[in-house]
View 1 (cartoon, rainbow, N blue to C red):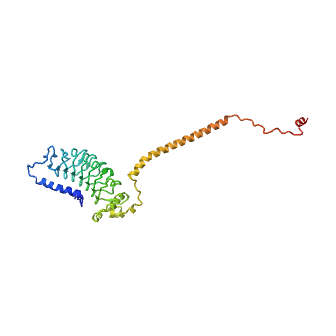
View 2 (view 1 turned 60 degrees about the vertical axis):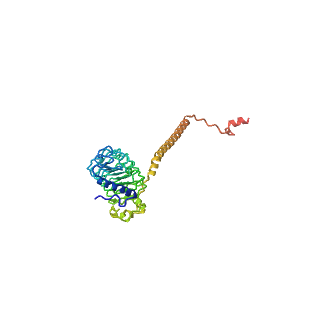
Length: 331
């Protein structure tokens, strides 16, 4: 069963949905022969899709095996949900640089190349829910600097690294519910300063030290009670069914605080310099000690080679009064 992306949509998402509802009805009600901004397979409309004024291309439920060709900058909203797109290659949306809305739900998607979304710098809404994604390459979402809403719900993700999301300064809504996540990597939420809607239920959370960053974020961003009750630990056994919001910072005092990115940068910058300075100091001290020892050896050698002088008498020789020499001296 597919779960909704946001139980309480943000104002931006609500406005976007209001804009799209009449467009969907327009697709259904458009009579045969109506002139659209691009005919199917034409130079402006993707092949096999239905397009209407405003840049919306409806390619839903057409059993498409790949992203349709013919995307252009006139496409602002692309609906590719309920197709058979199993993989997104590099540059899968080349030419659609003005795309704002992309729906890829329920495609059986298993692979997304790290450069699949390159060129989509204007994209604001991306739905990848209800697929079969098990992992995402580093840098996958880095090009999407304007992204405001991202859904990865109902996949098979067991981990999500900070390098995958990168820095998304405008992202406000992130859905990770119904995956296989046991924790969120440290630093994952640091690059999302605008995030205020985070959907996490339906994951097998392990309430250990690795969960500390997430619990800290949850305390700073209180969730409605109905939602908080769905965030439960499944391990270890003594914490089973404990809500994530019940863990205070004191519960993690026994954990080693991970180093921040700035601390790691300082270590990497100062470490080699300190090592080289220590090495230079050791070499200098070794050279001084070697020179001192060599000087002592030379001095000892010179002392052994120099001739010894006979000691001089300290005073006139003493004479015995009864000796012949003393008698001669008296005459």
